[in-house]
Length: 357
Ligand SMILES: Nc1nc2c(ncn2[C@@H]2O[C@H](COP(=O)(O)OP(=O)(O)O)[C@@H](O)[C@H]2O)c(=O)[nH]1
Ligand SMILES: [Mg+2]
Image 1 (spheres, rainbow, N blue to C red):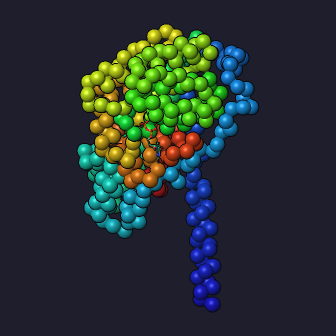
Image 2 (spheres, protein in one colour):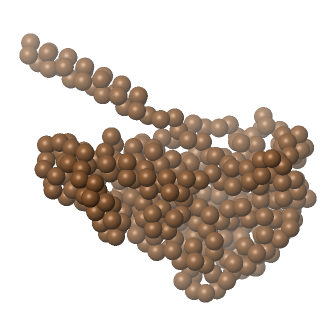
Image 3 (cartoon, helix red, strand yellow):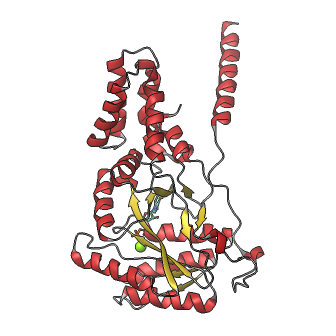
């Protein structure tokens, strides 16, 4: 009899907590695009793009929820959450410090955040809430996370994807190409990683998946001329956006930096216009991602970050120093290897997923 009552109790508690979880979930964010000059924008839909009709475009899949994909970072705040108001303030701060460090927020940023929190005089039961507010405030500093797109007629937008080898540049281009096709943009891919033929082959697979054209050069060829040809071709075909892949080797050597600067200059020549330089960073590398972000920001003007592999890592906290120390907005996050595993970075969902209020 007692066992029956316990079973009923467990079912009721589970049902209640499921309702709370469902209620807390926010609608997933779309991949937003900001149009640079809305007042002079030409109507796009009637511009007679040579792409396939909308019916043939890939169908939008529901974006994955960050909370479910955040992997192991999320679990790090469980001990602090479990403390509730029962601990003394010092113990709560200790748990917060441990969670931040293990999430790879980094020593410097962790200390800064906790010092600010201490100065606010918050007690043990308020640490988690105050930390969540503080993190939301960090992200509010870089408020614009939309992907920039210039609607001026005749302009070919170029989004350059830069970053070291293996971080997920090519995969991210594929995912973005699919998402843009879904939005009705007319895209062309540029295989600017000419280091190995396999790099262009990999991009060609994504081009096929996304139903877009791709321009490639010879192995070992000049990446700038590939991007130049892609812009010309895009203009001739009526494509309004070129997604350009680049090689990520030798990032500490001067020649990659020079090469990227040259690609950027060439891509910016009429009718091309570089509207995004997206630095791709691998979340699993933790603090190393911050080092890379610093180097690339100095070398080429980065306009936003794509943080990949947020699934299955405990180092997702690295977005905090990237935003706070470098002032770079994280615009997209990769949460898997599949074509739909890319979502717009939404700070509130991230903080919600992280501290799990
Ligand atoms: N789990 C996971 N794997 C990813 C993600 N993005 C890319 N990858 C994988 O990371 C590896 C390197 O990606 P690639 O695009 O070739 O990197 P690139 O050298 O920068 O172009 C591949 O095996 C991808 O499938 C992601 O968001 N999550
Ligand atoms: Mg690649």
